[in-house]
Amino acid sequence: MIPAAFEYYRPESLQDALSLLQTHGDDARVMAGGHSLIPMMKLRMAEVPHLIDLQAIADLRGIRVDGDTVSIGAMVTQHEVIESTDLLRAAPILREAALQIADPQVRYMGTIGGNVANGDPGNDMPGIMQCLGAEFSLIGPDGTRTVAARNFFEAAYMTARTDEEILTRITFPAHAGGFAYEKQKRKIGDYATAAAAVLLTKEGGTCATASIAMTNLSDVPVWSEAAAAALDGTACDSGAIAKAMAAMDGDIDPGEDNRGPVAFKRHVAGITLSRAITRAWSRA
Amino acid sequence: MSKKMQITLTVNGETQELLAEPRELLIYVLRERLNITGPHVGCETSHCGACTVTMDGKSVKSCTVFAAQANGAEITTIEGIGSPDSLHVLQNAFREHHGLQCGFCTPGMITRATKLLEDNPNPTEEDVRFGMAGNLCRCTGYQNIVKSVLAAATELSAAKEAAE
Ligand SMILES: Cc1cc2nc3c(=O)[nH]c(=O)nc-3n(C[C@H](O)[C@H](O)[C@H](O)COP(=O)(O)OP(=O)(O)OC[C@H]3O[C@@H](n4cnc5c(N)ncnc54)[C@H](O)[C@@H]3O)c2cc1C
Ligand code: FES
Ligand code: FES
Image (cartoon, rainbow over all chains, first blue to last red; front, side, top):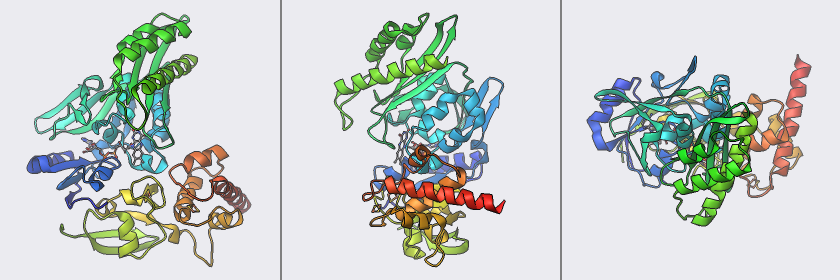
């Protein structure tokens, strides 16, 4: 379990990190908490001759809630997400989800930026970010740009981020209303067999807006507009939930693996979604 | 082999300067270069928590931290928590309540538990189970580990109250 040798860098500014990325091209990669990357390097499934550690870049830290806008630095850890009272007010779904990721030790190191930049379909934050309608800020040699979370994930481990870009911040509107992240896993610390993120608002006894995203049920997270539409104007009763489950089932594309065959995954996906809607509705 | 780099760590209050390859894992720097063998290697794949140390105030699995990444950090291992002549309250509680059998997981368990009780001095049983979820034990079935941590929490709180 010894990774291949590498040169190590700890730049203190984004500019220095970007120029290292440009100098070393394909041979360079950034590291956040290292809790996806180091295991891959140990298995030699990732070889990184030039490793750029982002830990000393102050610009990548900090959680800011400014009116209705929430902005989280890429290097904010899952532990910091759980501890943040600002986030608990502005987007409580993040705490509920972060508590279901890995275990305490991993959450102290793993970052929100690494969790979405990684592009692993098993990661939990990509679906949450799609559900929240988040935007990812990227900085590269040609300046900065933003990409919507809903357009960011292209295939397993493939994202809209180019190799020379660094993810700096994640921004999304604060959410008031019902929320839930329901995750089925084989044991604590496991990736999801299936998970459902639900945000909704209630007006006069019916559902006014809804957003639904599913985790680990395709090679990218699945933001299901059809499932959300099935809840619109309903009281999220069992009939509406059944329609949302059927619509979601049409959008996912799970594969068979050690977490089970396709039919089982579809079954679990439906159950997690039904529980998430029920819980979100009870909180709306 | 890549070039070695100069690494400075503060381990259990002592400054250590050493040369290591950036790719060396913190657990091996501690065990093989510094001869601090309290933290164990159970799985080497970030799952078991036997290698848990406290790094800059965080519980971390030292098999998943590069030497270079830890450069400049302050680290506490089980050796910095108590000694045979003066056991930490948690160590004593594990002894009293049979919180260990073979003892392989124990340094990681106790190191993690010290941090848990620092953050949450009055945990419920559920808090302890959830907060210790990154540490696996093949022997005890966890019941007595949870009992030990809860007993230590009660004792530490009582001592703190008495001091106030
Ligand atoms: C035992 C265990 C259980 C786990 N369980 C779960 C789980 O249940 N759910 C879950 O979601 N995750 C889980 N994880 C993964 C964990 O959450 C990782 O920490 C996370 O996926 C990656 O974050 P990181 O900061 O460690 O990123 P790193 O490992 O440092 O990086 C991951 C990838 O993202 C890239 N990257 C990182 N930051 C940036 C940036 N700012 N800009 C551009 N690229 C960047 C890196 O180059 C790398 O390719 C688990 C990990 C372990 C070890
Ligand atoms: S040896 Fe580090 S987690 Fe098992
Ligand atoms: S006491 Fe043997 S592994 Fe825990």
